[in-house]
Structures are given as C-alpha cells and as structure tokens.
Length: 397
Image (cartoon, rainbow, N blue to C red; front, side, top):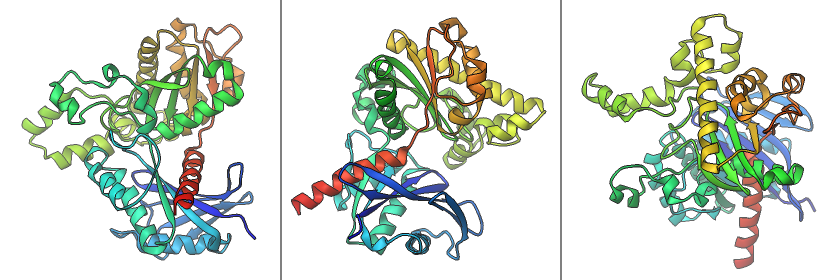
C-alpha cells in the first residue's frame, strides 16, 4: 500500500507554487513540486521530481474560478505520481486577521471568514480563495487546511501592533499584523536545529524576495516586523512601495485625482524596484545594468533593509544574529554586502569569500553579530500543518 499524499498550494499575487508530499509517521516528505506563473500566455507548468524538471504547456487559460487550470495541473501530476493516494490539501493564506492564530481545517465557516479578509490582502487572498474553491469543486472529498502568514506574529504586544490613530480603529482591526510568518516559522526551526544558542537569542531575519520583510525574534518568538496592516508596508519590494507617508496617498487622491483602484495598482504593481529604476522589478536584472537608475533602486533597497534591521534591533534591545533568506537573501551576495556595510556600526562584518559562496555562516570571526544565510521552505510548514489537521479531522470523523 502506498503512503498517503498531500498537496500544498503557496500562491503569490500572480503565481502559485505547488508541493507534493508523502505523509510518513515522522514527517511530510517532499516528492515533487510545480510552479505556474499566471502572467505567462499560454500557461506553463514547471514540474520537478527525482531531480528532473519538465516544462509543460497547459491548454487551459486563466478564468475566474481556476477550475480548468487546476484540473489540468492535477492531471499532469497524476502522470508522475499516484494521486489516487491524495488525502489532503494545505493552503498558504496570507491574512488571518485576529481570528486565525494557527492552522485550521477549511469548512464553510472558515472559508467565509477568509473571504471577509480580502480587503486586507487584495492581491493574495483572492488567489487562495480561488485555489480552495477549485479543489472543493474537483476533489470535494479531500480535507483542506489553511496556514496563515499572520499567525506567527500573534506573540507581538499591542504596543508594537498599534498605530497612533483613534483606539476604536485598533479595536476594529486596524493594526499591524505582519506577514511571511510561515517563512519565519521555518527559519526559527532551522536555527533551533543548527544553531540552538542563536535561536534562543535576539535575531533579525530578512525575508528578501519579490515580496520582502524583516522580523525580530527573541527566544524564537516574534516581537516586531516591518510589514504592518498590509503587505505594502516596510521595505521596498519588487513592485510594492514599502513604507509610505499617508500624505502621499491623500495627495494622489485629492491633487492628482487618482481613483482608489488606480492608487492600489500604483502602490502594489508599479512601485518598488520597478518604480524607482524604471527598468525591472528583478534585482538580478538591475545588478547587471549599468544605468544609474538601476543602481539607485538597489541602493535604496539596501538602505531601507539596513535601517529596518537597526530599528528591529532597538525593539529587541540588542542583536545576536542576522539571517538572510528567500530568493534575494539566499542568492545575491551583492545585496547582503550592501546591507551589512550599512550595519558595520553595530559590529557587523562579513567574510567576503563566504558571502560570495553563499555559505551558511557569512560573518567574519571578528563580527559581533553572527550573519547567516538560511534557505526557507514555506511549503514544508504548510505540509506539516496540513498533516496535523488531517490527523485531527480523521480522528474526530
């Protein structure tokens, strides 16, 4: 008898990562993965298993419900894996608000509550809903679970989460939530396994990808983070603005007569590295460019990341280690070096060769702060939580 399988869906604003895991008594073990970029026409499924990667052209196009795309995708997975053994599906959901403080099984009630949070994450939340509903339509017998990016930051105090606006708005949910929690949860697990002494100390982690944020941990618990009420806040990102004077939004509304939809599009998809450079949202492309706008975009990015790391160190009252993770953080030594040069006053010093090699420890022996590069794996957290939900649902059914 084959071991049961589970799928994970990790949606971005315009793409989705799909993981396939074998459920063992000890853990969820990845056996395959796929990626679909919804911006490509026609759509293509990048399917990886056993060290081989295939690129498959999909016949289906993007529709409002994604039923056809997911049905075709599951069909391709079934040509490589025994999907008859599929028992559960786990989803990354960006926003859990104040209601969801941990993973949950998805039923009608939780689905409605997730949908009610769409205004707080207008790019990401609808993608999760479409994927959940597609699986409900295609495989209604499967147990589905939701893992929330905001849940990890629930250990932050009200002082950290509060904006200086009328208290009634905080009570209505207008507060700092924080995101990338699944990534940070994985990083804490890796620190605990590989660097237990650091895991119990004061840590700032920088999740630097197309979406980017930093978070502060003390003894493995989230104490502060750069993202706040929405995924726009904090440091500049690929196409998102990062922290912005609210007066700019008022100016765009009142003086430039932009609509709310136009401003939303500007801040989410036209800003960040793309907006400053006018060239690309991809930091690799900007690194290869000789244009001054590209250099300025990268310098602004490093400047803001370093500034946020210093601010988070203030929250912690010190800094023992700095962790870089996600696509940029794991693979771009130039960005890490630019950030750490601005933190030299804190005693941060890199080992140039280790940094160039993307080593695990990239700080020098003289550095007063240990600097690490740790790969993240949000899908593993989703899978582990989905397994726990599956076992719980089966035991109560």
